[in-house]
Length: 433
Image (cartoon, rainbow, N blue to C red; front, side, top):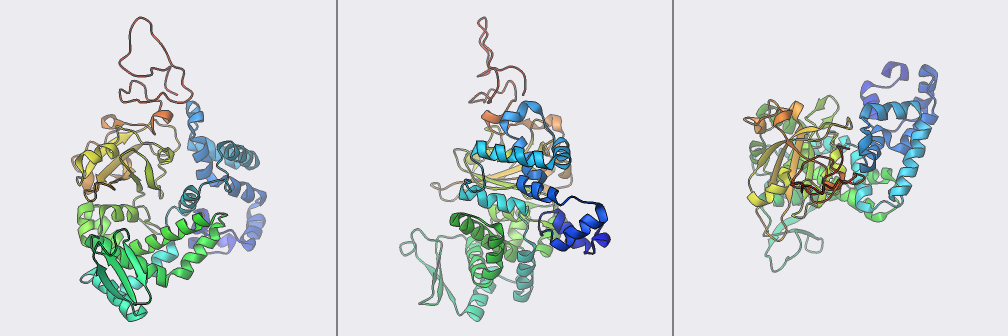
């Protein structure tokens, strides 16, 4: 196909993954070589591709229909204009149209469009890491030297009373990058890498943000902030060396944390990005929640974890128990109802920070159980589906019967009432939907 389109196989791969646009010349070749109707491109873009259509069909209002990914693909391929019409109606009804979308969701959708893999930033970070020889000695020392030699900026650690609410500050008058003294060592290194991202990748990041065509400036700022963090993580965990370490250790997370001097959250972020063409890692997802189960970070990567679209999490998930055992890594195999909209059997790891009790979050990392057999954190864990803990995407979207932990009935379910006996399960309802 690449030969007939007169492009390289790698460029074709990027087009297929929505990481490069389909140029006018390629469209002409498609029409010439494959009798392709170019109107399908416009419809596909309006829907957001197969992932965008599956996301909409995964709505709780369609849960009883059990529409799988294959059916969605057939719908989009056979009737792209009707699929675009459905997406438009759905978005309008949900208040989810692009110009009405809140900035955080808009920025996250753009990250998901790239599957949280930004190849140009990764290559630039890897080249800079090699130039700085970050594999040797203390990373923070090498980063401080780069700031001093290239940008004439010194690094200064300031006491808490001077920086009570800031983590990092750039003082151009004093030519200093100022860091709060309460930061952990891995956080200090990450903040210095972030400062380098701001100084040295401004143009590359600006181009990526401009390509998103956001209507809201807050969405642009949020995406820029994500890309700065992406580059910082790629600099401290350069792609090739990091992936080799993952594969050599069987994704042994504590070993990787020590080897690269990063926190569990930083490591979890990086594991969702390993989608380089010809050099892919496992497709992890990452979620961060607070004590109330509210999601503050959500990166699906290439995992296909559509159940994470819910605004709430299941109380039976290890994410909820992590707060009871702060600092400990919990491993759990979970299973969701099979809908065909993505993998439904996962191995998950959760850890709540043991630092500031006033700002404590739990980070959850997950991978398809079918891929987890040889991984270090899955040793001794029962991976069979029948041994997994059944969970749902939050009570309002969950149709699991006989769950004693249920707080609310699922939307659209018909409640049943027995005058003879009282059920041990709150909100009994008819059948699984």
